[in-house]
Length: 298
Image (cartoon, rainbow, N blue to C red):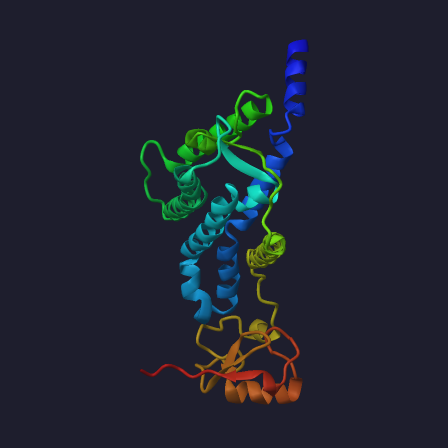
């Protein structure tokens, strides 16, 4: 027990080793940035489908291009991703040497192409699952679960000082993170803008998702039965395609928009002059609530 306590104390005193909180924070910022463009185009496509519909279909590719430009700039100048540089971290080899060109290229691919491929696979298997397509014996969800389990184990090993890096991807690349020299980007204002934009977009995503879920919950409510009608009680055998007032096939049919019932224009117009409400639902109505129905004669 004493040896374990001394080992943990040594880890805490290691100034070059990032804390678990710093790593979680930079991972969170990285996740916040990832997918922001797709969400932006999704919101725009919902409101302006004619303008942003095509862009939304290519949102993943646009996000890939944005990530490639952003991460390439920070790796080239600071040997770190955008999120890592923001928290004054940098990538080094496991023997504490700086990254060479090959290491920066591998880091760039792991920061851009790998998340893009995972997103495309998630979308593909999600659509395949909804269409009830058959999966192979070892399906994608099992592979994803295994990967997430490996990530969790790696985090635990890093916490206890048994691993030099928190990420299995960094482990495969032969890299680790350490505290940088403090030379952050001179354009720190741009960094702040990107970070604040990421959190703002996440807030919009939460708000939009909340509004969408409320709308879906309203749509999932059962349709109430039609209200009791004095006209229907007098004529209980009204058939489809007949006017509820005259009990004859529609002539110059029109719909009363307050209730949705269809009548002959002459019948309902005369009825509204005398009663000012729908004869079936009893909802208040006037002749201004009548909408003419034009049948397709082609």
